[in-house]
Length: 215
Image (cartoon, rainbow, N blue to C red; front, side, top):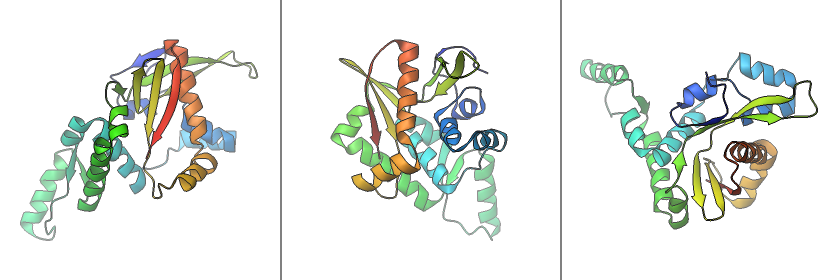
């Protein structure tokens, strides 16, 4: 379990979320009430289909080699037949994450769209993905002087005058006005951005010049 300030590149997403530290998702729960925060820790929410799709998309875009190893498209087989059952059982025992044909197509199409976009593709090259950042955040309004915090930026890219943090989001409506409305009022993405920037600058003593959402 990480308890020391720094940037770690060898921590899995599962280890990160299960480990110690106050993350941006905890802050969103605290905005509702301390009880919401406590409940979210004691009773973690189960992965929804949308969350599964989002995680797969992140992996396909930022870590395509790992995506090829860990994910597989569900074959078109009749699972009521002996051969179909055997093939499906073998697939489940492989340990790979099975995506339906529709899910796999959506994920790969989104990944190809990002990599095929002139600006978006440049934002996710030349940097580092899925790093876990831990720091001690000084506070003045609580009984404790510092709070151990964490963040996990999707991608961090060095630029001439500082760093750019890129965060990839999946959405059902990519129109700017609709995305901005949900980003601020429903999902509190601005809170996440502030948390990520503060943590990265705290650990590296470098300037974050932009936080960019790619959807």
